[in-house]
Amino acid sequence: MFLEKDVVALREKLDKLEEQKLSTAQDAAIHVGQSSETWHDNAGFEIAIREQMRLSKETSDIRNMFVKIHTVTPNPKPTKVEVGSKIVLKDLDTDEQKTFIISSYQVLNKKDDSEISYTAPIIQPFMNKRKGTKKNILTPNGEKKYELISIQPTDI
Image (cartoon, rainbow, N blue to C red; front, side, top):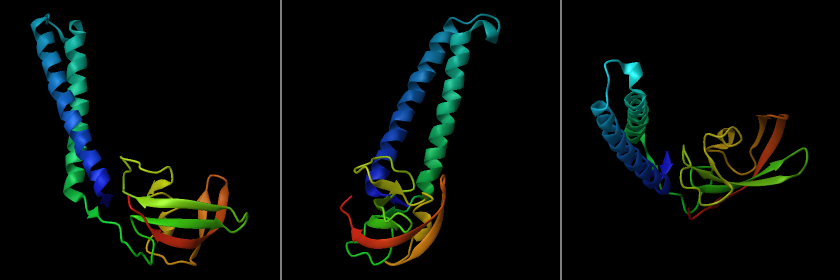
């Protein structure tokens, strides 16, 4: 699931990679003219080919992602945690509250510092849950218990 802003950013990233691939192909062609009899004697050509292979893999991965993308429009009146909602979680041991904006699978165009992917370990257990839900979350500092305090709409 992606918000529209991140779909646009992903498309821009793909376009930029395609331009880099073309430039790398042109570099490789220049180095062919400078080629000697063995590959190891033409480092420029070899580097350009490796870079072209890397860029091809990355563009292929993004193209495959586009096939699977589901664009999500934030719900203006969320009653459960979903992509596009803003939530507040309370650490039940410390009473500390954290605010998160639930965003795309990959947050490519971050509009707010509290924006986080719906796949994040602290968010995933609360997806599709309602206010008042309590969950134990494994964190780098050990297990913590959080409560979902509020769910609000966002305009991201």
